[in-house]
Image (cartoon, rainbow, N blue to C red; front, side, top):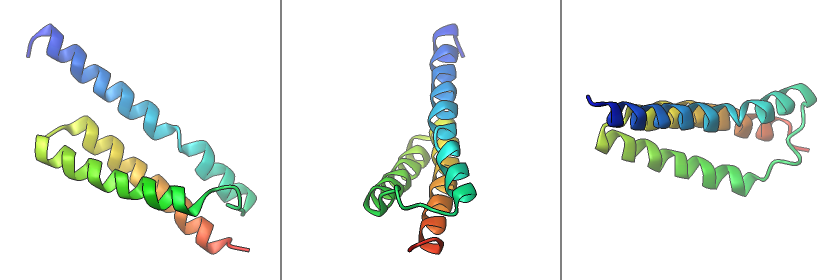
Amino acid sequence: MNINSEFIELYGYLAAILTTIAFLPQLYKTWNSKSAEDVSLIMLVCFISGLLLWIIYGLKIGSLPILIANIITLMFNLGILILKLIYKT
């Protein structure tokens, strides 16, 4: 692996970390407040569908950063979706 491809891989991992942790505050807030009223169900379903497609894409091209980020983000968003359904008012 040369220097350029190492930096490209690093960008992938950094993007994966940032986009994945971006959902932790929402998950925490939803869990803590016991409310997901402000979270759109349609957005969650669309986003989760997109994550599933990213995971398939990551598998097809063999990209570990894409797989790791999207699998973890999928788990966080499934958690938010489950909490939304549990706390539905």
